Image (cartoon, rainbow, N blue to C red):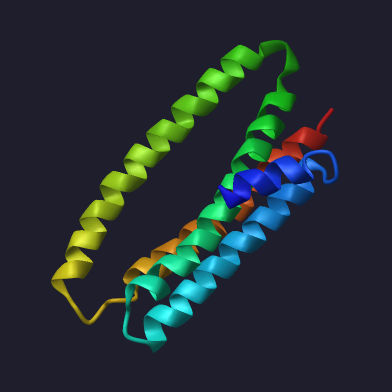
Length: 142
């Protein structure tokens, strides 16, 4: 909810690209904190949840801006763009959830890899930077 509130407050003050940069910075910070805590201390509820709140805030700040950037690419076909965006989000979430469930199950079988979740979170956060760069680059095309 904090990211959504922040997105509403920054709506007229920052461009979509700057808001996405800020959001990915929050997500990267949350992922790095989670990775550092996972490798350095014994997990408890607070230290597991606190970095995820920061990560989720960044995600909820990024999604409205990314959606608007995608819709702005095809102003004459906003309905089609919105439908395809929803399909891609749902499909990729299902695919990632299925793959991560398999990997997480294998990692749970090996208790020595307790920081594997934080590593996956860091990789997924960093994977979003190229996607945002592609949307920004295609928006600059005539």
